[in-house]
Image (cartoon, rainbow, N blue to C red; front, side, top):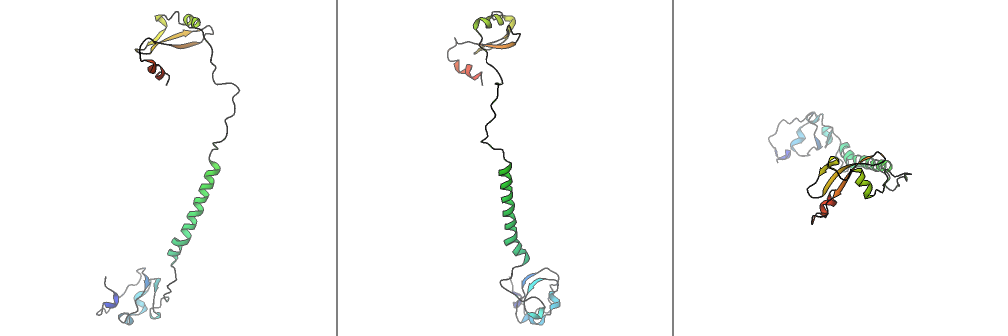
Amino acid sequence: MVSLEKLEDLEYFNVSFNELTGEIPNGALLKNFTFDFFIGNGELCGASQFKVESCNTTRLSSNTRFLKYILPSIAGVLSLAIIVVYLIRRPCRNTLLPAQSTPPFTIKRISYYEVLNATNKFGEENMIDKGTFSGSVYKGTFSDVMIDAIKIFNLDLHGRVSSIFNSFK
């Protein structure tokens, strides 16, 4: 990269309205140029002959100040607000469900004799499905006029106990 100060034969140099930033070099070559060549570059600094601000090494541009201080502050406050809203609105996991006065279903004890009568002694007319390994399913009508499906497991087949338990899953 060539420095402007090393361009000895430069006679005309106009960088007006290019939104340049930084320091205008203070070399012998640029001494012949006037402020007209640098108009419209508000972020330039340098010698007073160019009618720009003097360079201050501690001066921060407004963009730098925004990116360095204001933007992280805003992001921090927003993050904190989001966390607070989340903590307030999330459902509380430690609350216990209210005790139900009655269970959603009741388990009724039924004797083998009642099952035998409900399925008409496991008659073919009441068979819904016959499984290859685990047994058969029958339709049964009990005295309370409730129709249920009744599964009869075939426990005679060796090693099929696991398939019976899988039918409950």
